[in-house]
Amino acid sequence: MAKEKAYKLLALQEGITNSKAKELIDKGLVTVGCKKVMIARREISADTVFKVKEMQSVRKIFEDDDILAVDKPAHMNTSEVEATYKDYILLNRLDRETSGVMLFAKNKEFQARAIKEFKENKVYKEYIAVVDGKVAEEMMCDLPITTIKGKTAKSKIDKKNGKSAKTTVYPLMIEGHKSKVKVVIETGRTHQIRVHLAHLNLPIIGDTLYGKPSTKVHRMLLHSKLTKIFNYTFESPEPKEFKTYGF
Image (tube, rainbow, N blue to C red; front, side, top):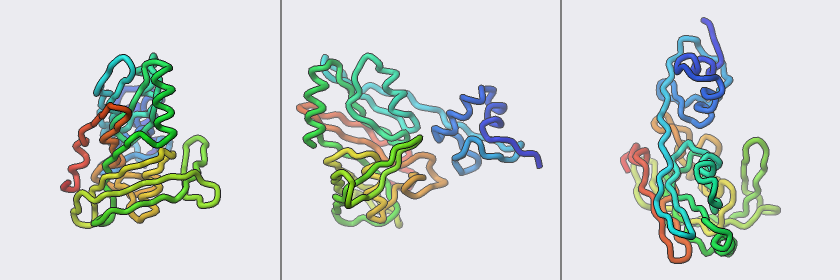
């Protein structure tokens, strides 16, 4: 049976360029059957039929003279959100498959004040996650984290050389062997929640790097729900994917 690289087949099916097809696969928007296509250059059967998920748009939550808060959809890189608001100054990042609240400063003075709040761990950051495992009581992980940066970043627990990190997990609901949890972080290390939850044997559903791949959802079930800074409070509603497991 004839085979071809996934991104080339997708380009033919959708009538798009090869580079656009590769981008869609890299974003995690392409599936075959119930499985997400993970490698754009993987050779697969030439008669494969793809399904492409539509990318949602960034939604504005709030804006005044100092700050802009937006709701980032899953599958969108932080750099793409920055490009949408290129006249503003990014204050926090979210992983590509993490949705929810992102903040921008609208002037240098507010940026300096906000960065100081982040550095002093005075910004309240609350996330929602669906994990593999039963969470019936509050738990905490404060193990330091080291990040190795290359083409893609990857973090790990590193008690000797890592930077301090603290994550607190609160139970919300249990359904079967899965739990919906509230996660509050005092620090903001790269992939902190994902690494700490994996260390607690509570991998995030849909996290193909540290967690639990799933055929039911095609994104990581991690959402930045609530952020508080100074006298501002910004909230993003949970995406519909979080109801997949009965939550």
